[in-house]
Length: 305
Image (cartoon, rainbow, N blue to C red; front, side):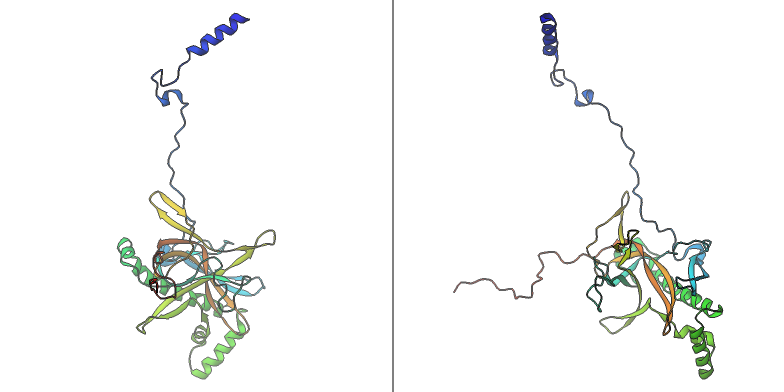
């Protein structure tokens, strides 16, 4: 027994370190499999507004939750889909927004139960973005016309469909007789298009502004209210990544999803644009750095007296 222990001791003494044996670390380390670099996947935003040679939209009639007939905008070729149709905007410049956590809570009587996330954009791009996307300002013009044309197509479908918005059509017909115009034109003129607004700059010039919004929260499967803030994305050299955005400053550039929603109440009718889930931050204007004066107090040095 003692001879066996002695032999084990001799074997242990004969063992050397990697440095003593002049071996590299790689020679004594188990090889690991190298994973192939994969391109990070981005947001699911497959349909551009000008896809299919400018014919991305198909108008169909469906019943809403109340059982009323209402026209809906679908992706052309996907008329039977039960998913809400979402279309990508071009890159747009932000004028105003409530995209921070909590959206427009505290504004216009909004609180944590009825707040919304919204973004209001105008045409034109910063030089840096325009240089990288030379056709985008032309697409902005086309987008604004496309939005208005889609609204008119939805409303025309409503006007031509029996059992849809009948009370509003009667009012339009009455107005047409009085004004000696066409009932359809009166119907289009009487509709509210909440996504098409105007912005007045410091020089007093008006500019078209596109507005879209989404509910601030929704009920999950457990019946609990869940925040519905959009997901922000950024293009990277290797693909895409989600980004934690605290705020979006005026002048930033976004590309995002929108859907059309036609509605009718006893007092009004029209079309609005819902803001989709995914927002791509194309260009972000940062707030002044922390060294900038943010206090309302005057800058005066301390002088003892």
